[in-house]
Amino acid sequence: MLQTEVWRARHALPMNGGVLHTAGGLVFQGLAEGYLVAYDAATGERLWEASAGGTVRSAPSTVMADGRQYIVVSSGNVATSVGATGFTSYSSVPRSRSRPRLLAFALDGSVAAPPWAEIPHIPAPPVERRDAGLASAGAEIFVAYGCDGCHGHAGVSVGGASTDLRVRPPASAEYLRAVLDGALVARGMPTVEMTDEGVDALHAYLVNLAWDAHEGQDTAH
Image (cartoon, rainbow, N blue to C red; front, side):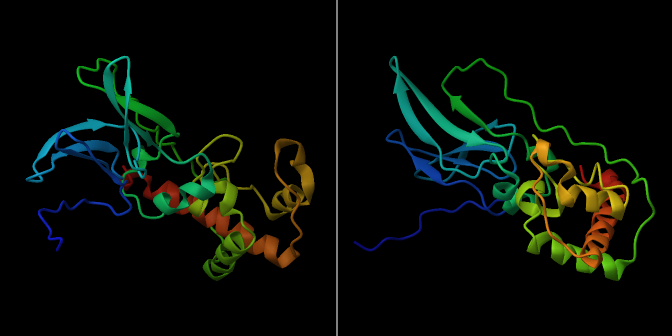
C-alpha cells in the first residue's frame, strides 16, 4: 500500500520528541521549547498544549491506571551534562534546560505545571579577558580532554556536583593546575595530566567563556 503524507507540523527548534498516535485519533508530541502538544490525527489541527517545564526529546507513552488514561513523558535536560550537550548547543530557550522529570498528563488534571529552570546570573569573572588565540586553543582542549562530559557544552552544566564554569571560572591558571592535579578529588573531580601550556590555554578559554556569558546574558532570555 502506497503511503502518502496527510499533514505535517513545523517547529521552531530541531530535536523534538517522538510522537504517540492513540486509538482516539490524537497525535501527541513533546517539543524542544518545553511543551506537550496534541494534534488531530486526521487533519493535523493543534488541539491542545501544556507546559512540560522543560525540553521534551523523548516520545510520550500512554498507560491505564485505575480506569484512567495517562500520557507519560519525560522532560528537562537528561541526567548528565554530556547527555544534555545536544540540546544546550542549539537551544534558544534557556528556561527549558530544567532538571529531568517524569510527567503524567490526564483529562481534568488539576496539578500545576512544573516550574521552568531558573536561569543563573553570570557575575563578572574575577580576572580580565585572556588572549583570544590562547582561548581558542583552550576550547579544543576542553573537548579533547572530555571536560564537557561533566561540565557541559560551553560550560553549561545541568547542575548537581558539576560546577557551571560560566558562573565560577577558575580564578587563575595556578588554581586550575591544583584542581587538575587532584585538589578536588574528594568532590568527584578526577586528576588530569596536562602540560602547563595546556592548563594556561584551558584557563584562558574558561575565563573568556565566562565573560561571553556575563556580557550576553541580558539577551539570552
